[in-house]
Length: 44
Image 1: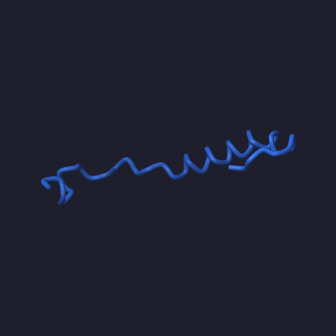
Image 2 (image 1 turned 60 degrees about the horizontal axis):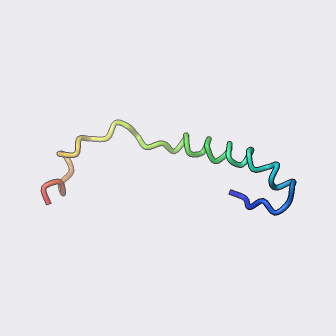
């Protein structure tokens, strides 16, 4: 994110936030993970 030091920077914050949100949406974790019992260290 950018730090707003001027009015121009402040005006650009919504666009920067929208870009960050789009990036976050693209990097969502995969929902089809194996069950927790499959992992080796579950019994430790």
